[in-house]
Length: 367
Image 1: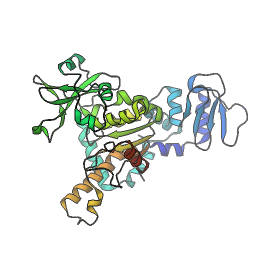
Image 2: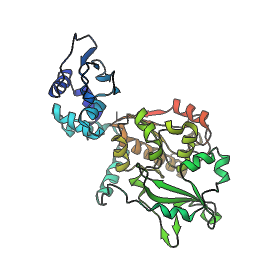
Image 3: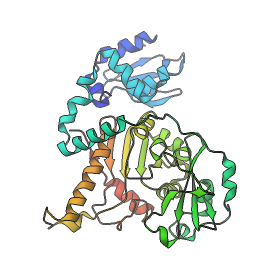
C-alpha cells in the first residue's frame, strides 16, 4: 500500500481540483489565499458550503459532513473505505507502490524489518478468512448472568459495565465468562478468566463446555469493537490494548466515547490493522502491558539474559507500530515515569494515571 503521508505530500492542488471537477464541482466565488469554495458534492448537496483549505489540503463541509482529510473526503465522495481512497488517489496522480511505502522501509531498523519479513512470509502460507462464523447465543444460557467477579469490581469495573459487555459466571469451573462479539454484535467466541490455582499461568483461554472448545481466531476479531465503534469513528483514534479487562476499564472511564479495543495478545494481525484503517482512523496508540521496567536495565551488561529479553520486547513493539506508522500517526503509551506495576496495562492504575501516560506518549515514525 502507498504511504498516505507521501501521497498527501505528492499530490498537487491542480490534481485535487481536477478530481473535484471530474465529480461536478468547480470553484465558486472568489478564490482566497487559503480557501476555495465548492458545491457540497461530499453528500450530493446543492449548497456551496464545501471549503477546501489550500495549506493543509483538508476540507470542511459546513452543512453536513464536517471536517475531512483528503482521504475521508474521497471516502464520502466515492463511498470508499480508507484503503480504497488511498488506492484511488494514487491511481489518479500516477503514483505506484514503488514510490510509496517501500521508499521508507530503509529507515526502519534492520532487525525490525527482518521480523516483519518473517511474519509476512509465515502468514502467506495461511488461509485467509474474511469473517468469523457466528455462534448461536443460546449457549450463553449455560452460565449464570447475575454473579460477578469481586476482583474486577475491586479494580474499578462496575456491574453495569460487566452487564453491558455480557460478562457471565461459570460456577462449576470458577470461570469469569467473556463472550466475544464482532463489530455488528454477533457472538464469535467465548473466552474465560479462570480463578483456579491450576490455571494461574493460563488464566485467559477459550472456554470448554461439555467437551466443545469455543475458540476463535483472535487475529480475525477485535474485542470491544462492537461497543466502541462509534467512539473510534467519531474521534478517528484508537487505543489498542492486550486484554479484555482494559477494554472494560476504558468503558468504565469514558462509556460510549471510549475508542479502545483489545487484540487479546501481544500482536496485531494484518486483518486487524486493515479493519481499523478502513474505519478512517488517523491516530493509533499502542497500550500494551508493562512487561519490563526500563529503569531496571540502566547499568545492565548487554549480555544479560533479562536485558536481551527486554530488547526483544522493544523490537516487538516497534514491529507492531510499523504496521500502522506508514498510514497514520502512531504512538506507544510508554511508562517512563514508573507509574505502573509489572504486567500492568496503562488502564490498571485509574483514569488519572492513564491520561498522564497518554499525554506523554511516544510517536513512532518510519523515518
